Length: 391
Image 1 (cartoon, rainbow, N blue to C red):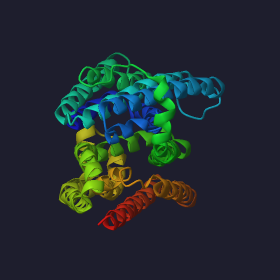
Image 2: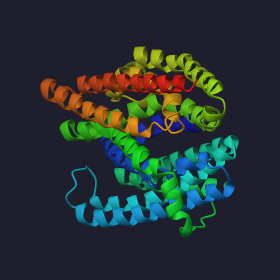
Image 3: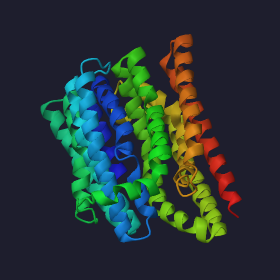
């Protein structure tokens, strides 16, 4: 439902803001989407693996302390780099990043505590409320001041709004126990040293088209891509968030206690997503240029062309969600980190080579999409082979 609200709001936003404004937002969100998952070195993800409520609170405290340190560090770095950046917005807005780090960490902690308690309905209902509030802020703000600044401000406060909604229903009361920091850091060090770099690299790789389209062709084309990508990821997020929230805790319990059942759960989760993922693949693969022009208004056909060529990658990404979710319980972070480093280098090289050889933005996006599909397929294969070894 939350993603449905975003989808319904998109045609309104594309009639209020132009491709250039949405391209600037795309660049800002590319930075935020890289930073948010690593804002606490991925320690919130360990909450689901804890064996008691006290240990879960200790992990939450450790994550909070890490986020405060990283927030201070980021603010210090921004002071020196805000005037030398090459992004299409005022460097002053980078100072929102430390705030985003703190609130996104508290948001992740609240989400993981609710997942551990299997309060999936609460998460679902509040995500709908959050989506409605944020999209309403974008629309109303745009009616008075339809510039990229409005979009950046709303995006910056989005994690904070979501956290405040979730905080009431989770055990995240903001209390910090600094004495448990060393113990928890050592116990779950693999999240900091293996999972965090992998998530960082994944965020960077997903942001490559936004940054490179802006650099070579301008923020307008980044805006076209941002809309196409946001629409294509809605089916993925709609399904994968629910799958991950339910699959992750169940798989984590079964992989050690009942490996055969864990394999069965993995296979069912993966195979059940194929027909679901096939629907948007067929629709966007065949009709997206005309569909985008009709839904988002004249002038957005380029977004439709982008959607057409990235549909395959979105299909494979959706089907691979159980595999990606299974990486932490299988303790494959180290292997996956090496794989992610290689895949990021490959993605950048492909985009760079195609842009310089052809000079065509659509061919560059198509090549990037093909590489993305291959990467997600290989991840699924790698995880499946490791799951089978558990039997």
